[in-house]
Length: 98
Image 1 (cartoon, helix red, strand yellow):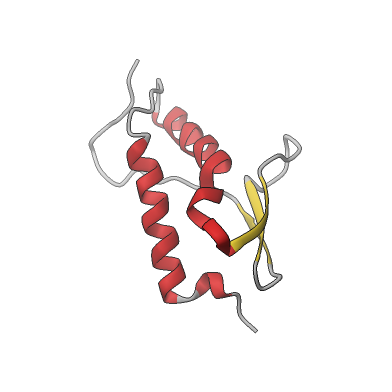
Image 2 (cartoon, rainbow, N blue to C red):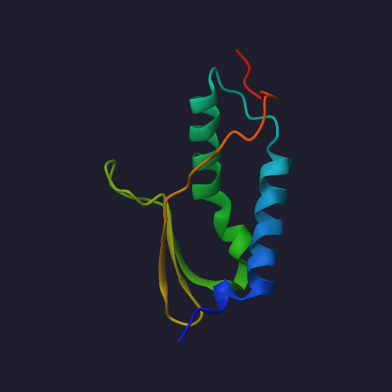
């Protein structure tokens, strides 16, 4: 059995909601690209549950300092998902500010 989180419709929904969260927080201020990545990771850890909506029945964003996970959730199908947020700079435009 496969989690319904990975259906094409749900993946598209999560992707669009995540993009909306990031777009709404476009004013992230950081001194370096790494700082922006850390800020995005923090934002998603706190607010990714909003992107999941009712697809997640249990959500967790608090982990020991050295844990690999940034967030985890249990979906409505009973599957447990552990997420390590990664960022990638895709162009020369910088949103870093000092």
